[in-house]
Image (cartoon, rainbow, N blue to C red; front, side, top):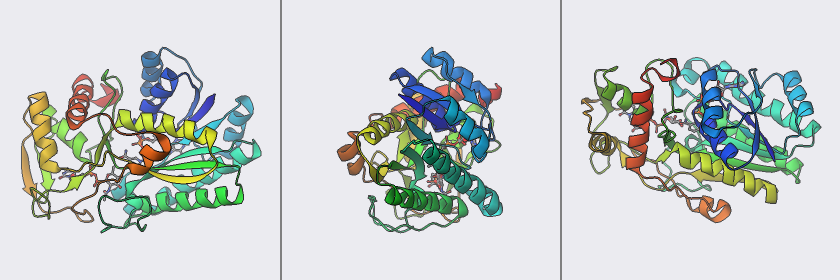
Length: 337
Ligand code: NAD
Ligand code: UD1
């Protein structure tokens, strides 16, 4: 069984590659390294003890993609490749729309020409309309607030339409909540460029002393301690969810949207306190005003993943804090360390 993984050098892709290799799948990886480092590919090989072909090019390049499909007999595609910074998408909408939409459309075209009919897509909880009742399930109304979110919304629609037109296709649209954590070895993890936008990389870099203090965005939300509540999920659980989605796609046709979250909401201060307790390291913080665009609470109804994929998150908040910190300590400058 051979899986094409686009974006396999990235944060979630690298963890999924290790998991796939450990489960006995063959993989082929394409990544143009626009937001990653080739060292991640070396570490996937080291961790799994297995070799695989890696191609450094843009998935929007249909000719190069066609060559890869001709060279390898691909059974299923997992499409992680995409730009993902919400703020940047507001200032560079065309880059986001072209990269994220054209890569998805090009992949579908080349797959169709080569009789490959199974597609696992990296979607996001960001497709849910703000203000949806929590826990949010897959039937909730959709609607986004930024170009990044709209690219996920549009790619989902494209894939639903492709499957509708080709009923022998299978597409699984995985809506991730907030992925954190790292591989237990500390060899692969999240390596954001510049100052992190997301909470946990900001915490780990503050604990390390690279950043002075964490800015907690708002303590006046209607939550148990006033700070924002999210559904944090260990990246290793997420990786397992992709293996389960591949297995599901081998046995089913049609298109399914599936939440990948734990179903548990933690506040910003819950995370800070757990991180300090588990790792015995201080995280200085100040309370700042709310970040524009943020909502009080987001967490998943993870029932559909359990019913359809037999998947549920196994790791807890302590695991997430411990593994995020191990990766950061062992790689203070990420893959540039
Ligand atoms: P990441 O940036 O670490 O990984 C994405 C990878 O895709 C990078 O290695 C990048 O170099 C590559 N890439 C981007 N555009 C490409 C292109 N046109 N051709 C080839 N390679 C390309 O991000 P991640 O956190 O691993 O996220 C993976 C996917 O999951 C993305 O599609 C992202 O939007 C989605 N997602 C991520 C999160 C999250 O919080 N990390 C949440 C929801 C959804
Ligand atoms: C953001 C994106 C979402 C994306 C997800 C994972 C927005 C509106 N949403 O979600 O599309 O899928 O990242 O990449 O940007 N916080 C602080 N201080 C910080 C950073 C964050 O207090 O320095 C708080 C936030 O206010 C929020 C929580 O921590 O309450 C989580 O924030 P973050 O990690 O950025 O994720 P989301 O905003 O949930």
